[in-house]
Structure formats: C-alpha cells, structure tokens
Image (tube, rainbow, N blue to C red; front, top):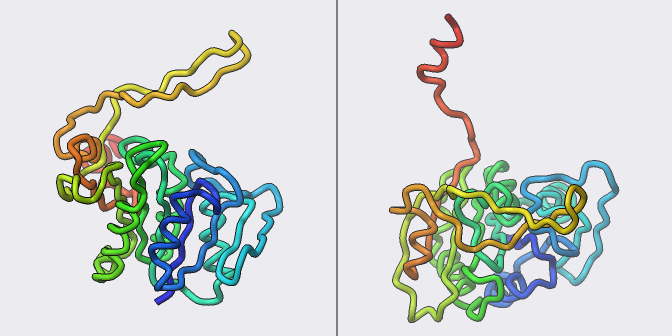
Length: 242
C-alpha cells in the first residue's frame, strides 16, 4: 500500500518527521510544503508558479499550500494513487471552528474529495513533548487497517493530548465544537496595523460530547468529518418558493 504524508507546517517540521520515522516500515511518500503554511485552509496557489524540489528518493518539498501538495502528488508526482493520506502531526489541536482554517485538515479533505481514505492528526500543544504518542496512535490505526473503514468522502480528524501514552484517558468519538468567541486582534498601530492575538481559552457552545471537551479530559478525540456540505433546505425551500 502507498501512504502519502503531508502537513501544513513544512517538510522539516518535527511532527511530520516523527510520523515519517514511525511509519518508515511502509516506506511512505512525503509531499509537503517547503515552509510554514498554517491557517491557509483549503487555499490554492492559483496565481504563481509552484516550485517542486526533490528532497530524497521519496520526498518532495512544494512551494504551495497543503492542498497544492496533495493535488500535485496525485496528478504529477507519485504516478499512482495512494491508499491512504495522513496529514500532520500538527503542533496544536485542530478542533471546533479551527477545522475550517486548518491547512492540516484541508490536506486530508483534498484526499477525501478524491475518494482516498485520509486522516488529519494534531497534538494538543503548540510545543509538544510527546509527538511519539500521536505517531504511535496513527501507526496503530494503519497497522490494524482501521483506515479502510473511513467512509468514502470523509476524513478522520484526530486530536491527541500531549501526554505519554500511558497517561491518556482513552479514546472518544466526538462532534466538532463551536467556539462562542472569536480570536481578537492586537492593535499594533491604530487604524493601520493589526495582528491576530494568540488565544487558547475560547468558550464553547454546548461542550458535552465535543472534540474540545475530550481533549481537555485527556482523551484522544476522533471526529469523522464529511466533505459534502449540502444540507436539506427543509422549510427554507417552501418559504423561498412562495
């Protein structure tokens, strides 16, 4: 089986390197951004050339976004379709509203669009001490074939506490939380320069059963995300067609 690894933090990021090492027995391919691309969501490098640099026999660094990396891997680089795509390990969780901004989740979503089982994996600290815990968990999913049961058009979003494996409370299937507050801006120069404020304590609407709750209690959060954003119009259809 061909495994494709990618991320949004850059090909040299510790999280990705830990995952490459842990899955080395599968001889994974790596197609990842050449530098940091966090927060880029599902964006594409549409208006500039995308440079691809070979970094090894099975590794390529791409000047574009995580989505560009997956597209190039599938259409130009690998020459055949991977059986699984894993994006991460991202330093810091990707939960709640942030799944929509995350390049880590976007890379896995892009693979899911193509009908390829995919996993996005993050760890609950910006400067993690236990990347091996997350890497071992993903390796276990791969070894046991759990990835084969990810429904087509879906991806598995995994958030792992930054703890030794023996200290984990367990695993929990969760829903995506909804933050009740947005991240405020820091005013650098009034009316001219602003910067996003680092905020780790956002409140959540209805915490129970969410990814945020699970991580806060020491559980690995497993959330199945769909790529079809279509909803039933229900009563709205009747109102608009009057």
